[in-house]
Image (cartoon, rainbow, N blue to C red; front, side):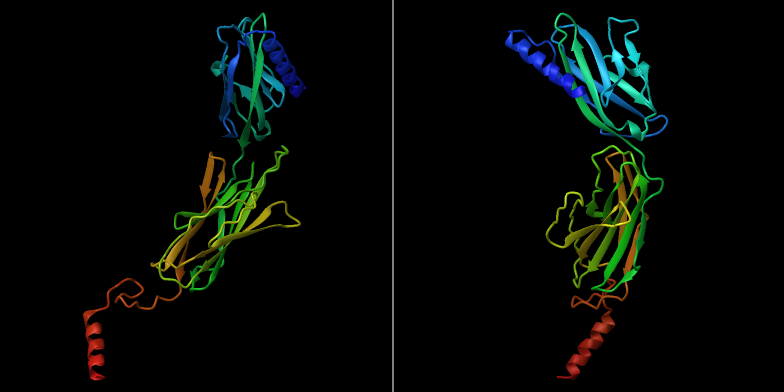
Length: 319
């Protein structure tokens, strides 16, 4: 029905232009938040801008998935009319011919929203635009992080798991190493609107190399995009047979830090309206570093003058 209406509008516009008429409705655009939080008191302001080129406005109609829920007709009294929108309501005090404010949203109101503008007689030029809106139910808790060990030796592989409670839509997970983002796993989102809450899970295998200088390479990836980045980062993706979630395995290599310790964490995000970090885990090196030829031990402390003097005396005695 909705597509047929759009086709009719396009045919009418074409015939009118071929007849030498002047189009009186131009530059129609729609502004809809990509995502908003659900719950009482939460709101979304949907805006519609247009240029009637001096013609009078006949009506503004707003649809959610082809179902009309708000109408503005300036010639009628009152000019506004609201239709049922299950699970939400329209704030008439802040709705007019340019915008409509919807309050108390729930996730089942996620989907495409359309604004239809019609000029007044005699031609009733009409045009329509649409944009998606997602109503987010965030996780209840912060991400839960677990690690295989709290200490390491050079050459070890430290394994970590990050799990996030169910949410709508399922969150993305970003791994954080000493406040640096090292990888991001993007949760697969189905195209159908089943409105089901889903959790998220990611595994990390962190290999500590035999090196002296601390260097963190910033790399990102997405499980759903199936992209592999070069250098020291790869990931594997597999689906558990008895679980709907994807298990994303991230492999990252690093040289050990000069301090002998590093902090590991993960962050759950949903669009740009939700971000929550796990409690960081501090992982320390098992044994101190061997002394370097520069005269510094593993803690960075300069060797004492007496120690150096004794070493010099031993060297002279062997001559």
